[in-house]
Length: 189
Length: 189
DNA sequence: TCCCCAGGAAACCGATCGGTCTGCATCGCG
DNA sequence: CGCGATGCAGACCGATCGGTTTCCTGGGGA
Image 1 (cartoon, rainbow over the protein chains, first blue to last red):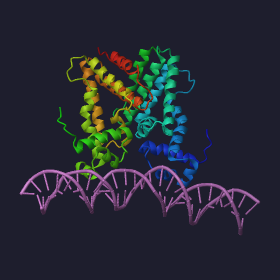
Image 2: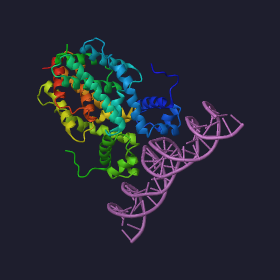
Image 3: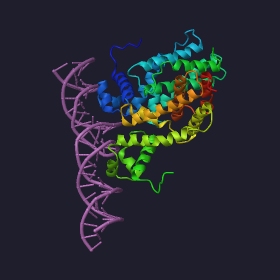
Image 4: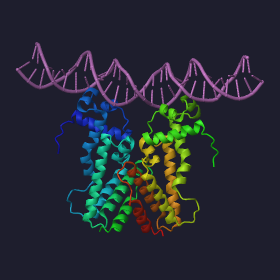
């Protein structure tokens, strides 16, 4: 959709920041980011106020694509139950990829500790959006306690991606039964 | 129990490493660790081969105390269901503490990325031990699929402590119902 | 009293951090 | 052709990293 003859320096920086901080952590050096993006430090500091802001922008501008891969289409005609299960099927699929290291938004918050860090705020918001999606579907699906179910699903989401990320579990045959159990208990058809 | 007239330099280093890396992350400097422990760098490098080994030893030697606070006594006469719920009650209690920042073993693995790092190996083992405890209790409790239930409980454990650690959720009224639902579905009385 | 040495303080090492700045090559445009 | 804007390469800054080494003090044994 977006006309992309060739990515701008800004886009290349955002892409490099997303890739390298995900693979190596937020302590990756500015020099490495710029080299990977093919952009000089001079240009980077004209486009962004600081490394922190670059990281925050990187997370923020990937959010749309992230939810697009994770969430079902806004109105795909499927039931809330199916739409919720779709999200977890995506997680399980992503976890199978060789370069999967868990949810990047969770990782950033854990690595930064400081929740007032701009990137941490962005990550926090994205997590809140996912919980809101779950809550909306829970309500539509007639859950007895939509708030509770949404929090449970978020908990499973983060637990699953974290454990897959640290290779404590490969999620096979784990996520779907767990989510199904919670949906059943909540009365979501 | 342990005779502790005054902690040895080694013990002070392990304690400082545990405290500071938990609060500030694994990238805390060696100098800060030594200053907090009241030990010179010279002595530290006589006691430990490297900062990485200090960190690994810190996690390893805290493991016993950690499981002691988390798990019920080996043979307390309670049912498997109660013993499992005890673990999660402990998590919820810890999450209420002001200085709680999530499970340190999960955090270390996420921060280090490299799963071959000595500290990451220690953390991995401790997580495996917790899953083994869940599996043993699941078997004792007559779970239909003890392996599945153990993985589900580990998933909830990590999800809950991670989300509490990043302040995405305060766990109130969340963990107990979730675990209860999973135990019920698995047929654990 | 003298000696010895364990161990703390801190200098030092090369590398790297986030961030700034200079130098130069390349470009569009009149 | 000349000119100014752009932007990469990389030197440079002070601070800090993990790790090593030097210096010196204080206390215990002969």
